[in-house]
View 1 (cartoon, rainbow, N blue to C red):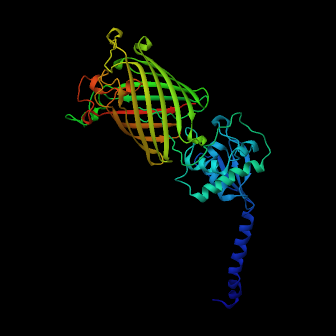
View 2: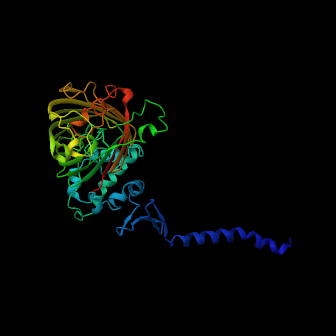
View 3: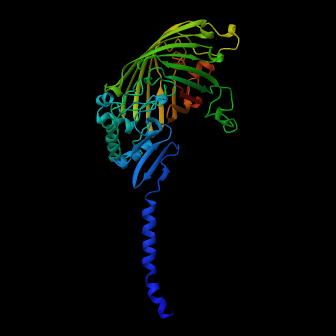
Length: 428
């Protein structure tokens, strides 16, 4: 190497270091942006080394440097429903956490409990996704919205936050046939749909696989709509098909106690009336008390004492009105019991039994109907798939079995179990 080039080569490392430093300094003035969630509605924008959250839909910008870890958690987990600024989204009916009056009504335990356990029909549970430290940080961050904002509420109605932890969240208005008695939001509209493949056992007989264990057969499909008049009072209409008597059921339910309000148990009263052949005859009046209690946040037990006045034997109907039989009325009393256990945050195992303690012999009920199922719970809807010995889904018909419906005395034994499923969806 020529001796005159050596001093110049010694300067190369210093030159590259200076160039890299200059470029790095200049790059600090270039905004760095990235999406923080899959919805692409919120950007993390870094300008001159300072991070910001930009809610594209709401048109708001909030500094992220004040509480970066909690703020990022809030944006990733909560902003889709609550907005990055915590003011809520009017169309979703979520609360405005920047309202000091609302914050004054909430304790840290209530906020943390809502994050951990969710809220029925409104909010998913994050207890399995976030640890206690993250939940505590999110609780403090929610508190910060009211302290940093003096604006008024943007929503007229503020939904109540789940009151405490350790409370079970039912995924449906029903376990499988028995009611859960879960409360409904004011003005909420919930649709329920059931299928019962009662004409073919799923566990006995030949070629069960060839017939999809009874699914490849005729089904009894029922449909209902529930409406929340208030957050305690709801009304319901239910229709079952012609082949089970074509009943229409009208119902009103009132929630007296609710564990989410720190009551010791849940208690709901329901009054209903059924009329077969599209509410033209064979009227039955029902009175129910639905009592439930959370064993933990992952399990709940249910007791449903039910009085049915002028109950009818569960027999097959027909597409022709004159072939829907006029059965004599029988006063009956049943005592349903059920259990729901979450084996995963959104998956529950269901079991229920409905013994008739008064009037069973007159109704041809020799063994109580029983069911067990698995339920998948998602935000605002649920799907339950299971086995049962009862084809009925109205209040009076659910205590009957396939023994009278199919005129087969052994159809109410475990060998007579058939498939069914329930669907529920909140549409408003």
